[in-house]
Length: 298
Image 1 (tube, rainbow, N blue to C red):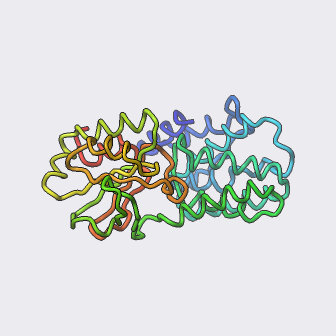
Image 2: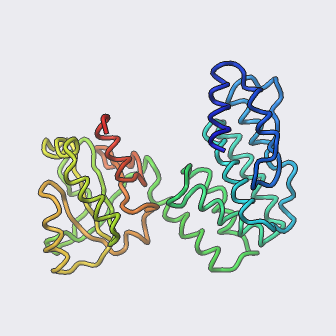
């Protein structure tokens, strides 16, 4: 599907978008149906993607049992691929319409939620959007047709998303390597704050080592322009404190065993960026994403 979207984007620049739609109008291998064809009156890339999204599911009856889970997921991911080029109101309207229709079949609604989670929220999602994913999660969390544990799963996700919305102020309590409780609002003043969340995985260890040796990041930390807080998802212990004390001299180190349950941490290691007032500017950044942000040449 990325090849098709690249073709559409390229042709949009050249003014020949319609040529790409012959590809879209043919059913792609492993999908459920041929995708809709935007009329010539839709002359822009956004206009064509708006039309495709609005009519994407017109010829699919989601009330009937889903018999090919793999094809359904590939088709749904293609649907999502158009989101980045379309107007948000069109995307949200189409999503709500799809979810509402899926409620006529509880099994399909649950499958739709699982696919939406992987495509829009999970660590392997190619397109993260809280706003779009919440449209799915709210319905699933409230649906009496679904088992209680399924509803609780989505309700917990909603709680984590709502707790750390971009633009909201974040104030966490954590235990420092000194064994005492601390809060983010006790940190020295800075232009920006980076929160690095770690678990016990090898990826977290590698990410921590990469950040600790990054020249551009260290330059910002050493001038006090940026403060980095490294938070490990474990309970405090003397052994942990001894190990963590060697992470980096210019980091603030702490631990919080509740953070994974309470915060929206979709990838591990996970990075949050806060402004000088400790409002969330970005969340769920990978280590690579953070390094690209602080070092344009990365």
